[in-house]
Image (cartoon, rainbow, N blue to C red; front, top):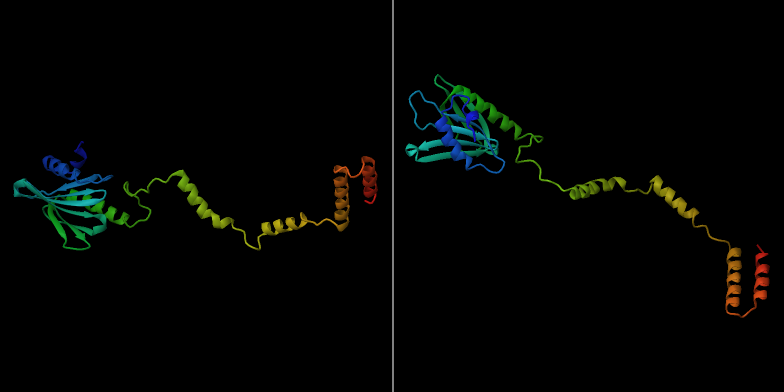
Length: 222
């Protein structure tokens, strides 16, 4: 991976490479390094302190024991209350202010790098409270089309419920009454006689001529 983008503000390439290699192994899924600021004291500093910013956290790095050991102070954006820096004659003093615990300060950060740090961290602190801001890791999980359909049906279901006063319901009730008109007693009696006559004929209790004659007589009453 090219480190050129971390060397544009005068950072020491060897220190940046060493810090980058250490932090890259600590990154979580979807996390990436945004900026690395390196301390630069007036005198020669073989192992300067540094501040690295990812899209999720801040890493304050201090080399100890001649570079054989490294101390890290790591904060997620939810742990940070604010960031401040003060420009001095030789560089700037950058202070990370957490919600709990002591403030952490690294001095002699080159002024250009301190300004970049301030801008990146301020933007991140403002965006973490913005409900419309979504980082790469915070994107909603994939929802299958079936789950989307079910969710839409659940949401839309109350909107199609019919109340007692609904015009549609009244129309349906009216239609039911019209379609269920009772037949007259006269039609019931005539139908019963015709059915009885047919039954007698089917059982061969009367002849065909008798059946036809009686049937004609009944139908003439209509």
